[in-house]
Length: 388
Ligand SMILES: Cc1ncc(COP(=O)(O)O)c(C=O)c1O
Image (cartoon, rainbow, N blue to C red; front, side, top):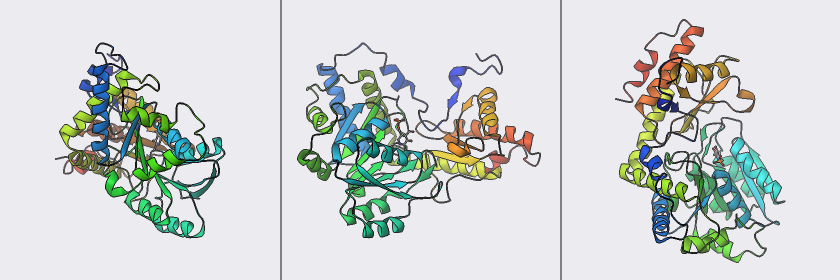
């Protein structure tokens, strides 16, 4: 028990923007007996995991890849496997994670250009269209939910503009898949990638990628060798087609946990889950709004999985630590220059009424000590209709 408030530390609410609270069914399968990486049992589980991944991404025809690592490994494997040195990529810069793609292209001396958007603003499809009319790109990198700015881009419109120009559309949905609507086949992107520890609600340790047939053809027919052993999707394709083959030992427990998390998602139903995330996000937004706080992301583009909001100047770190010490709710600070003045709260996967209630009530209580116009019960009034 925590000495200060008697709240069981295991009852702490992890509300950073991933990793997030993990269901006990997922945690429990990790303590089963060790399986061999080429055993019948694990191979069967892995085949099931790939099938479930296709369901999660809403695809019948695309090729799933699940490899040990995190979201960054999925980003880097995609960059290295699909782009060659003489290619040029365009980064839609909506924040820190979009910029990470640019850094990766730089690492491998692949040409890149950046289309910048104000921090907190969405990537505008018209601005993209006019750039693509002026210059040719082999690939455009889109971030679905940029966890730094907490903006949720309209990926359908952006992917359509990219595909009309003939470029590859690569979507980082690390903070989207499992929490925000996404049907891969309908979207028409070439790659959508994510990771296990965010809206999917599993433990960290797996990077997931879904590749269109167009992306697979490009992979198979590229001219230069892929300058990586582990991040080489050509090698991993052989393993995904036949998981009895060996590339490298996967984190077996992580994969079994992920399979279980996907089973739980299918039990809930994908669309039910997306609707639940939207409702929880609406409650978080209404609660924050009722406290008179401003959002980091512009209206209509606030994510359903994470929310960034401004707090009184210089108070972010102390509010963050009070939320933890007094209410046992762990949130993240804002990004970069906004670190001292803003907070990000994750509300994905297993975050529901209880967690949102405790977070908002805690925030109300802390803020009312700075601002005596905030009345007790403000957030309850604001969210009770939404979470009814
Ligand atoms: C949008 C986005 N892309 C990529 C990443 C990198 O993922 P990971 O930390 O799992 O490597 C993150 C992590 O928060 C993210 O939010």
